[in-house]
Length: 286
Image (tube, rainbow, N blue to C red; front, side):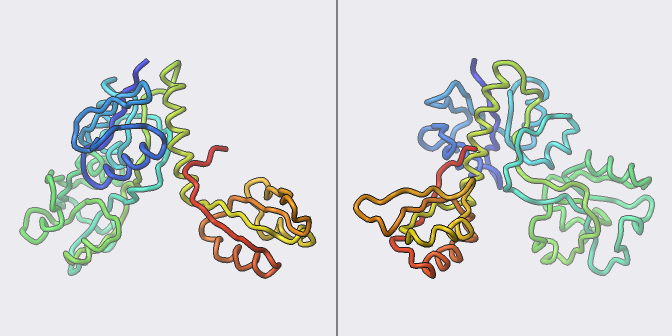
């Protein structure tokens, strides 16, 4: 049974999404990002490259079985979809921002009748309605930051990642509407297609988990085995192997957090370990 997966065709989510799919073992062939449709060469999967903002609607209406897009796009669409997996990239948030010289410094300070420029009108309207604020939402397709300065709006609602664009345009963030990151979304994960989707999601998850880990190997003095578990605890404890022809040492293998590798190597050297080797892990399946 063929699955249809929607992937952003460009922008901040496109390259990382293709990278994750490829590392997860989904063969998209050469130059997948330049095509609108790709049949995976090793799975019953069709990948459609479409606009990130269209993916929630295509899923909700059955054109796609599942898709990868930002949670900001899901919020804007208003559809109730199931989040199968947060992908831990594309972090940003949808924020209200005001000019630096404005006296407004909180959502409560925004006067009735204020004009808000945004490319996220649905989220913006719902947000201000929930706050009991009667505002005018002005839909723009981009460059919302300039709107207060050319008199189109009083304030803006826009995506913020580092905040540098706001600062560059003399704007101050005063509130958050939606926290976002890339995610795998579906309408429902049931039956045979649900099983297929979960298999792909778990493959992607294994890549994400592995990226924060390293595989470490070392020859450790046998008389130091009592402390090795504290140095390299591993996932369920280190693997200890005898070394042929060398009874004084054992081979220790373990998976460790990438950020701890420097200290682990230092601790291993301090107890006389030799032949220390670290390597990347492509996937880590629990």
